Image 1 (cartoon, one colour):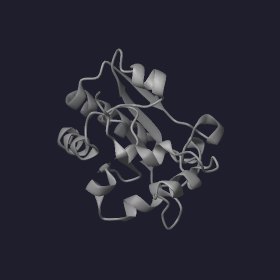
Image 2 (tube, helix red, strand yellow; image 1 turned 135 degrees about the vertical axis):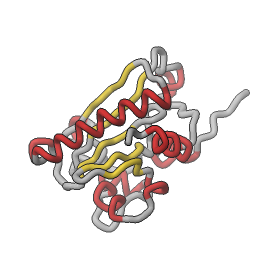
Image 3 (cartoon, helix red, strand yellow; image 1 turned 90 degrees about the vertical axis):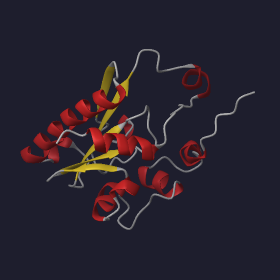
Length: 174
């Protein structure tokens, strides 16, 4: 019998805590001084450790620590607001420009057949960190949902996040 070993996923899989974004972060050890990883991580000088691929003037791109698929990016404004309509035009524009560059880098590295782009605004919409709006960029391939996702509710990510980070940094359009 083969075993899938991905201990870094256990914190995500344990869901005994009440359903709030901050509580989930606390349970995974990611609750920070301000309570928001999207506010705190960019203030640190550890981009590789924090998986921050690129920094813009108003927005940064970070790998999802619990990805849906390899290369799952998030485009995040520095502004701590819960919804897109609270962002100014410069921030919204930069978000979409970095989404576009992310699509190009993901095509270069992974050659996906499609993408899902999404923003979950509010906890009822599935936002894990509902207080800080962010956009997901998820590469997709035909058949990327296999029996593990369907039967076990578990995703198999065959690449270390540090490798994904390195590849995305190298492929990011200049």
